[in-house]
Length: 336
Image (tube, rainbow, N blue to C red):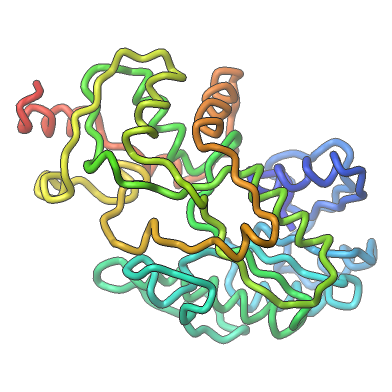
């Protein structure tokens, strides 16, 4: 479900490398993948889903596109495809947890509650940005999959996914900013470890789970087990872009006083203690392998230099501090 954007494309590429047959179902806004059986359609359309089902059966469905749709649309797809699919691998999010981003998380942490047939109006976003309506909606999507597939479902709950093809724009913004050079506003402390994962590693794990037969109905948090410190992250961005820029470290209190928006104006920066405290040991035992994030940074830059163009997405423009605002903050910190 999907198959041409970022994670979906990486999954299809991984499947094809394994020599498997793969069908992609999408609206056709971002092309097709050579080697796949492409079915065009809208996942909210009963007729389109029935037409898709007629192309089955399949050993598994991997759903990478549910984030744009309310639970009732996920339920429609699972109900219509259940007769022709033995397994469903559902890409969800850590936002389904009640405690995210305030508390450390395991797969046993409580989930937000949302019915499987909820529409797009269900849920709310808290005053401090947590919980989120998005989290409620994704929890409802999980409930919809569980209702149809039971123990034949697997749930992947990633935090942040980076790598070649990224359309959200987090890592590309940092790389572009590093290339521009000069003094660069970065969040202290440099020793803080962040846990994004490479899209290709998530894809490989998703495909492995699609091939599984244990009938466990398990959920897996997807986060980098070692992560990377902010200091090393910035150093790698400077190194791969050949930049002579220099970081200016500012602590959270200073950034907040200067009105810097967490998560977007300085992508990946957020002060809530649970954001980068996600236990992914269950996935590691099940076979999740995460390459060093230095490789993710280098490969993303290589993709960008090769005229890599992500699909257009409104979230791209949300990321990055305006250069004029950054200059004002740097001047206020004594770095004109």
